[in-house]
Image 1 (cartoon, helix red, strand yellow):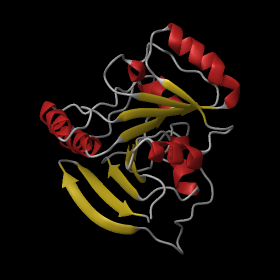
Image 2 (cartoon, one colour):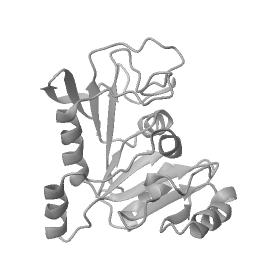
Image 3 (cartoon, helix red, strand yellow):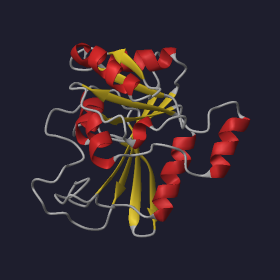
Length: 227
């Protein structure tokens, strides 16, 4: 019996493993066909999670974009978009970011105990409808997953960034990985990568199961099963 949500990691990277370059502008690694695929996957999930660094850097909306998919979710008794989730140790989150846009989806922030009260006041004064949850320091991913499961989240999509992907993979909490490869090199040693250095359960002795390879224009999806 599964006691936590099914966790699906989603990432697009260059051939040399980078998810962005070193410039101030966001690097687009994917294409319209893949953006639509990601939207379709989002529509199958109950929650979407990104780290606070991604909220600050990319200012993502984390919504289902297709009106047809939104209507299909509503017809099934679901909200138009999944719950938006982030985690933070510092509490450095801007209430005006698109993550906190009023009324578009439920929002949960898992925060370190030292910043919960400060963050609750800051977000509350800004009129956001986000719920702040004490999740330990550093934020305990198992506690986070247990809490989401208790809220009815059965399928969680994790969209980054580097530290978040690294932790889910190193702590063996990912069930599926969607890795999109863009056909170019970034070539900057300071550019963010898919994961940090470290020990991973899925090394050469425990290989992931390659379940699908899909060509979408000039990018390629590799879908791995980990559990």
